[in-house]
Image 1 (tube, rainbow over the protein chains, first blue to last red):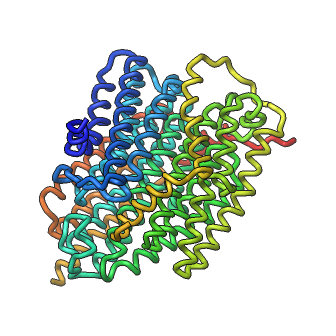
Image 2: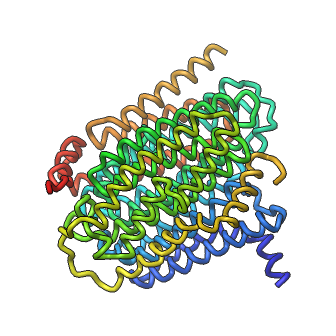
Image 3: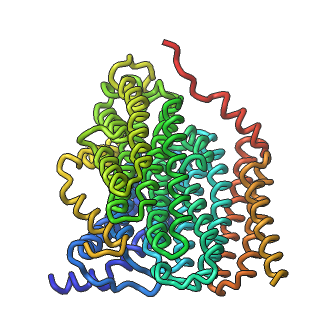
Amino acid sequence: MEAALEALRSYGLAASLIAPFAGAALVALAPGVRFAWVVACVAAIATAALTLAVSVQHLFGHANTDAAASLQTDGASLFLTPVLAWCAALILIAAIKFQQEAIDRATPLVFALVLATSGGWSLALHARDWVTLLVGVEIGALAAVALAALSSERDRGGLHGALRLFSMGAVASALMLIGTAMIARGAGVDALADLPMAFVRMPALVAAGAVLVVLALAMRAALAPLHAWGGALFGRGGDLAVLVVGVIACVGAVSVLLRIASYVLPAPALGETTAFTLAAIGVASVVIGSVQAAGAVSVRRLGFYAGAAQAGCILLAAALGSPAGYSAALILTFGMAVAALAFFAGAAAAPGERPYAMEAIDGLGRRAPLAGAAMAAAALSFMGAPLTIGFLGRWQLMEASVGADWWWAASAGIAASLAGVFFGGRLIERLYFRRIVAVAAPVGAWRFSLGPALVVGIVCVALAVAPEVLLRAAGLAGADLAGVAP
Amino acid sequence: MILHAVIFMVGFAIALLGAALASSASHALKRVVGAVIGFAGAALVLSELGVSEVFLIAASAIAFAHILFGAALVVRLKETYGGLDVADMDAADRESEPKERVS
């Protein structure tokens, strides 16, 4: 037992980052769709278990980081990597249901791309320096583009969505390359952890670089108004692509943004500009995302815009730069991930020729009770209803905002909840109080593969009922991000 | 010193021009060309800032991967839509766009 713990302490982090890529390589080479799916699920679950073990050991056991030269752990990586990894595992378990979205030959590659997306964002969350971070972000982002393109067999609109995702990704990559180079040059340090203590020779250059990095990641995280790429993909893309982009890619980008903010905000001469940029994008995203969600005519776009509003709240919490603010941001990010998982997995169960249309979910709560319950739970979380994880996150945001005299940030959180009542209520009305109109096509037993994602989504949304462990982990991770002793 | 600043500004302007083209061009191929221009501008800025060789190699790999993905996407779009005009793709998608049912 002691030897196993020692091995986990020494190699756990590296193994948890290698596992998804090794699994992806095996899956891509695997003969047959079902065999590839089994291998992908095993690799994803092993990765998720490893990341959780490493995080628990580091967060609660205060183990020393003994990572490889280009890796490092901090509050954001320890708290959010297991969230991403478990979401990826649940999506992969459900992925067999979507096998008709890609041609048979490409389906194993699609499973491998899910692993690569998750692995890329996890690598970026553990990067010690800018180059490793860039590589991780690009692996995650390009894998998502390829996944969106390959999952367009059933509806060519998905390919158009992939083009939009690619265009945005190229712009974000160019901005991020320039931004990171400006920070590295102006501050004279390559490692992220050295930034807060660095003697910044060219503060204007570094501040401009930080703004470019924030903008680039905000584009990838679908923060309004930089989220124009999402309409096509979330309107007509394949269900699997929507799940992966909506849950792993967007949450991964927000997580990396949160992590970078924690290093840039304490740096002399940078904190003010970065905090202002984060807060400005955050408020814009809350307002625009909420308005768009209220007017959405596609169920998946509604989830996408609601996610943008939630991501805005995360940025507002991060902009505070305090332990309470980081703790709120971590809880909100967790809430965004699980609500998006429940919402998009539930939406994937919608029947009919146009499953993305609003009318497809009419009466879904009676036809598919578990999927309906998952969507209703996600809607309640998006609106910040009491006893949901969304409420817990918004409450923490308000506490942290009021503590820092940022009344306007608390007001933005309340505005997001009020708007959420409108679109969430509309969604629940459609789920439970409308007549079923969509004609269900015959479905196979594979539809049950969605079950774990739906159940876990509902349970995690309801974690606010007994949030002690989650709050403790977020508190420890938030204190680590703020550089103070818990 | 002034020359360095000029090269930096020119590189940045080229990157912004490429970004604008990549995000708003009316033709899918032009979007990929916009991405290439954006990365060329970024490369100019990076070399002017004197970043490490590892950084430059990573940037080149990222740019190359994007161009490869973009080219593959253009081929698939041409096969699927029969053209590369983004407005035509929008129109084709709009034909089957979900409409609210009047109840």
